Amino acid sequence: MRHDRLPDGFGVRIDPRVRAFSGGRILIGGSPARMLRLAPEAAELIGDGYLEVTDTKSAIVARRLLDSGVANPRPRLLPSPDDVTVVVPLYNNADGLVRLLGSLRGHNVIVVDDGSDEPVRIPPRPGRGQVTVLRHERPLGPAAARNAGLRAASTGFVAFLDSDVVPRSGWLEVMLGHFSDPQVALVAPRIIALDSESNALARYEHTRSSLDLGRREAAVHARGIVSYVPSAALLARRAALLGEGGFDESMQVAEDVDLCWRLERAGWRLRYEPAAHVAHDHRVEFRAWFTRKLFYGTGAAPLGKRHGEMVSPLSVPKWTVLAAILFATLSKWGLLGGLVTLATALVRMRRVFAELDNPTRIAAVYLARGFFAGLWRLASAMCRDYWPVTLLAVLASKRIRKIAVTMALADGLADWFTHRDSGGLDPLRYVAYKRLDDVAYGTGLWLGVIRARSFEALKPHVPPN
Image 1 (cartoon, rainbow, N blue to C red):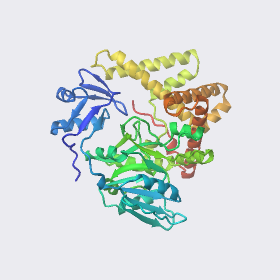
Image 2 (cartoon, helix red, strand yellow):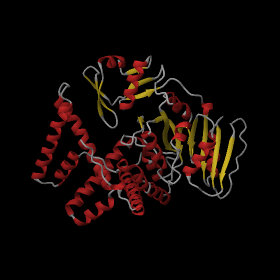
Image 3 (cartoon, one colour):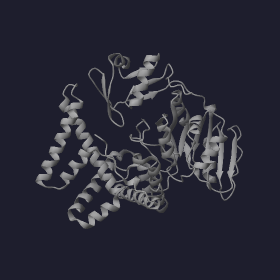
Image 4 (cartoon, rainbow, N blue to C red):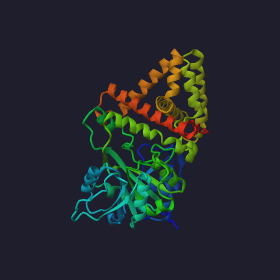
């Protein structure tokens, strides 16, 4: 039986992006965004935005804040690093393994050699923990290799590290604290670039790698800002993964996404902790990079068969889609229709905020944010997931061509502006790589859909409101 109560001393802090109204009794924020109403007694417990669990009542409030996504955990209890086994799936990367083992001090390691051409041999590591090697005589895939290590481990926690990563100082301790919450099954670090300067592609990957989920800490939710975490580096509660069957060994790609969503569906909590850093040896040679992005795209189709609309590449409210189409006509009636659509949405949203001061202003702010966020999602999907459809439309219509080119440039430049402080790549090359990145992934997506004979991974999702 799983005990869900947060321990005394566990803290939660309201996310800085959350807005408080009515003396802190109403909180708006989180991902997905929501409005949370609190009883006056609960609002008093939060005070200046921090709540420490001291009894059952405060534990219930803290749990609600965490599950609503408006607060982040600040754990104080730390499970012992001695209760962690590092599992390394390996296939033909002996040099990477040596580099990784050199960065691990005092950890017990299980290396699962997944049918490498040459069986792995571990150099002596005096005083650095025991290394056990398991070998598959033929490659069974990374999911099977991780499961083999998971089953062989005897500790309460397992850290999965691919052979092409190098953890940074303090990576494990930063994540371990989250497991003082008995409902947390999995925590992932931020994955940064091992090589960030060797060429322009390395600088782009340093800024926009598919594995780097950014600087913002978050709960992992299928529909949240962090919808999954990559398996290149994970720390997991062993019993939770064993209880859910571990990684799906039939999947050669996107098995990490599948695991996250199955754990979430089973009621477990997952966290993304960007304060912990693990460096990854990104592919920075163009052909290998493009091929890898395409490979990632092929994972959407098997996910669609397992998880349905959760894998949808586009989730935008109906009113956003309608307003965007009307504005895109570039006509007087289209402009009028778009404004009427937004005004109607504003009236409906105002009702939600009716109990707050200045409900019209608050509704207008969130309507504008939602509309522009929806526009960027449409632009991104047009250039990424649906680029073959966009290409056909561009060839058929001069008007659509102008709109598509404008949106593709605007989306790329906005993305560059958002990430401009981390990579140093000029906007022209950044946008070019961004569009190639999207074409590669989108091509893999369509190839996977065709092979699976299932279009579930391409179906847009329209929220009820």
